[in-house]
Structure formats: C-alpha cells, structure tokens
Length: 285
Ligand SMILES: *[C@@H]1O[C@H](CO)[C@@H](O)[C@H](O)[C@H]1NC(C)=O
Ligand SMILES: *[C@@H]1O[C@H](CO)[C@@H](O)[C@H](O)[C@H]1NC(C)=O
Image (cartoon, rainbow, N blue to C red; front, side, top):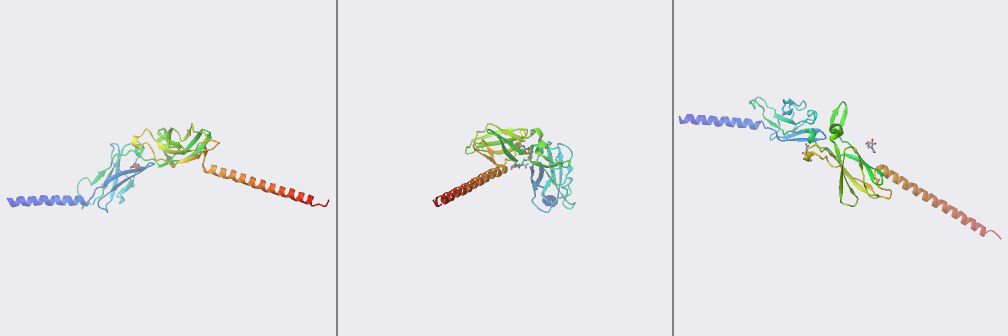
C-alpha cells in the first residue's frame, strides 16, 4: 500500500516536472511597452530565451482580437502597429503570443502576454516643432510654426498633427528677454502666433512646444523646440533669420564700398589739387 502511494507521489512529481519544463521552453513576452512618436506606434517586449517567434493580435475596446498583418510569426522583439490603431481616439490592447509547435505545448491557449491599454490620440508623443520669428513692428513678432508631420498617410497625403488634432492642437510659446531669467508663456490656437507687448529695442528668445489641453496632464505637452533669439536694436525687435543676416551683411558691404570709393576719390582729388598748386607755384613768374 505504502509503495503504491510512493509510486503515485513520484508520478505527480514527474508530471509537475514535465509541465514546468514545458512551460520554461515556451517563454512569454515580458516588459511589454508602447513606444509612440508622432503617431508612429511600436510595441516592444523582451523575452528570457531567444529563438522564438511571435504573433501579435490587437483589439479595440472589448471587440474581437485581430492579427496584425505585418506581425505574424516574427522573430523580432517589436511590432509596428501604426496602421492598425485607427481610429486614433480609442483604447487598444495588444496580445503577444509566443508561437509554439505541438511538441512543446499542448494547452488550449498559447502562452501569451497582454499589453497595457494604449490610446494613440491621448498618448502618442509629439516631437519638437520648427518655427520662425518675424517682427511685425516695435512691440510685436509673429511666431510661425510648422506643424510636425505624422507617420499617417491618408489618400496619398502625409497627415500633420494639425490634420489629426484639428482644434485640439494649441502651441505653447515660452519666451524671455535676453539677459533676464523671467520667462513668459502664451498659448496659441493657431500655428501662426502673434506675441505682443514686447519691449522696444530688446532682444528676445523663443521656444515652442505642441500643447493638447484635451489630453491627460502628463501627455499634454510635446517636446520643446530649440530656442530662436531676436536681436535688440534701435529699430525694435529684429529677427536673426538667415535672410536678415544676409541683408545686414549686404548693407555693411555697401557702406564699406561707398566709404572706400569716397576716400579714394577724395584723395585723388586732393592729390590733383596739390599737384595743380605745385605746378602753379613752380611756374615761372
Ligand atoms: C513619451 O516620452 C516619454 C519621455 O521621453 C517616455 O517616458 C514615454 O514612454 C513616451 N511614451 C510613448 C507612448 O512613447
Ligand atoms: C508661415 O510659414 C508658411 C510656410 O512655412 C508660409 O506659407 C506663411 O506665409 C508664413 N507666415 C508668415 C506670417 O510668415
């Protein structure tokens, strides 16, 4: 009787061992992360043992799982889901299934890991913008912002973030007077923003970031741009764009050429007058 119990116990142990080795032979994805910039969205993960293939499924809300066409039996540890996650303002989840052969797994459900929920409209990061600064008069400038392009193409057109966010997209413009530390902020509804009430003759530095107030607090602000400064001067704020530099250099060169010409002409004339006087004085009386 006792020996039968021992055999049973051994059997149970053996079974558990087989299960556990089978389990470790098919690792599930770990550290699943969404990485998304300007609506290009990639799912990444890690795995303890290499040499496995994965198939990615996604679902929107509580709807059925669908296979992502580009991520069937892939050996990479990432899958781009940019074109699957549309419409943008929905809650998506992804399911990373480790592909198995019948040899190493026989359960109904393949080993898999479900991601956290991701909403591209609310969570995709927005990159830094490009912009120019142009003075309007002594106290105002226009900050002209180029809306960053996304990775989304619709009807042969590459959409900008303005095409996607529409009126939800604002820009935050942060600026300060050269040599001072006090920063001021304004929010603009449009991509062409007027910054008023600048001090005449002062230089200012500007930085811009996309701003989407309808989003949760931690994803409202895009990356800050580099800063662009204007130079102070008697004519009010002057922008230091390439055009302005070229203009300034041209004016300087012109002035220089005029000075040189005038000097040369004057000298020649004086020399002529001198030689005339000399020839007069040396003339026989
Ligand atoms: C957005 O950027 C932040 C900061 O770099 C990063 O921590 C976060 O994971 C990014 N989010 C996505 C969805 O890529
Ligand atoms: C802003 O830039 C766009 C092109 O980048 C240009 O078409 C537009 O005229 C500019 N506006 C101003 C006020 O400079």
